[in-house]
Image (cartoon, rainbow over all chains, first blue to last red; front, side, top):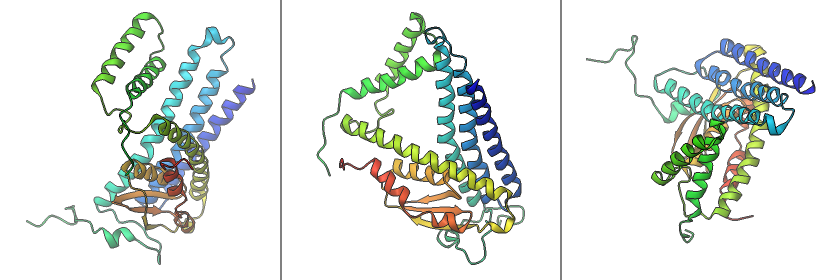
Length: 134
Length: 170
């Protein structure tokens, strides 16, 4: 019973963070700050939701010699968390880099730095507004 | 440079052990048929792949064990940072828009190997208000969402990562 309540609390907390990520995705001003919401909002929430699932599975163990396959399910759930934690930040960085290379200009607060613009001028990619010279 | 120790014969055994453990967890069948399938395929993979899992086989296993323990404690610290990061993003998502001060900062790291840089880039992306956009040699270009997260890039993460792979046992 305690384990059930705990797993529900974990899952609901995870959903709150998912909701925050979705709201941030809609409200943040530009592509790069939206990457903050999209790339990080789902790491902790995945961890919380999947820990909730794992606890819910552990709840079903009464006799370990008979119910040991449940532990394999828990290990598989943990493997999902490991893969998310490896791939999520990598894909966030790759998307942000691809956005920069593709010519998306970041919104920069007045008076703050944009060192990437100083050091690493992009080659202009041909777009509809900026067509490649013939 | 340190003197090169001989290649440890335990590395194939370690690779095989890791693969077999993953096989058993993902398969879930413990009957002789499925186990022998796992033994054969893990054996072939261990035999064919010299650089899989462990790139440099001249590092003594004792240091690998120390690194693994330090890496685990680093992961605990990182998980706590991720909790703080998500709470910060949650606050920003519901805050008035004027609280953001987006900027792109340049950050020079003392870390040398590719794996250390990968770890640093992933950790920076996971922690509060910062996303790694580009790595050019030892320069990191990082999008920070406000002033306090830009000020958080103060080298503590570098020190912790450098400590994991430090050769001395201090």
